[in-house]
Image 1: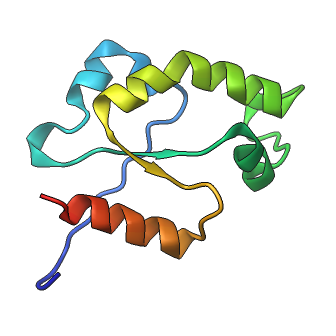
Image 2: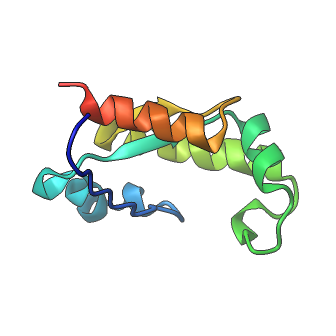
Length: 103
């Protein structure tokens, strides 16, 4: 890839993409949307039990699975999926750039 690439990262936490208006805006303006997907065990391993994540209090593994069950369809419907399990941040970045470069 030649030239300069400008990247805008806008996380959609807290189930924002489940709100129809927000989901409709994802990917508008010619900007692609990427959903970084991972399994519950990988998520809990990465974030741990953190008080800064009130939606995951109690049993983080079970709560994450419940939340993702409710949200997954909206994420997959509005974005290109990049699987992040067992990848370093650099590998995820490379996979994301490869996805964005694909015609």
